[in-house]
View 1 (cartoon, rainbow, N blue to C red):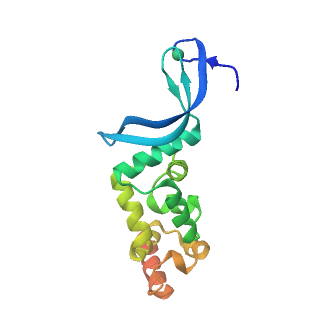
View 2: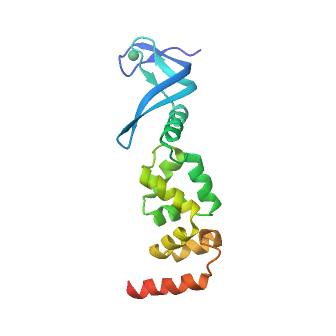
View 3: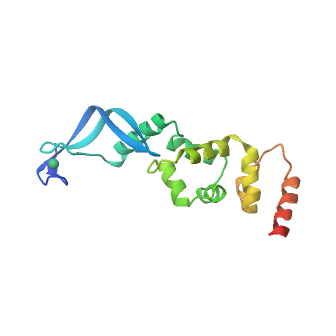
Length: 172
Ligand SMILES: [Zn+2]
């Protein structure tokens, strides 16, 4: 066992590592409160004031539980499904119109996507026609080259996409 650490909250040297059988907290998301419960959570607890600190792994588990309660896509699933499409974070962020750092935080679980963006992510992964639309709209010709045919609806020929791209270029 390591020596107690100093508490950021009360200043006492009384913070020790322990595993809580159940940890529950009310967390805010999109202006609503969600009651989130996690089992066997390793934390750092101050014996003097009761303040609880978590490392990133523990906080990640808490946020996964919150994602579950809210009903939005788990962080690891976003990463997995992006990789299935052979898209880089940069390419996918550009198609969605979000910052790369934002997509990166969604994938690590450091930040939760709002419900409208969760809907967008699900549509992006499940609806090839939406991906094809966003690729055309972004003018990211390289995404098709990098992402391969899996990034666009395989039922559509590249020819039809090329036609629409050149149309976009001439109007822009
Ligand atoms: Zn304390």
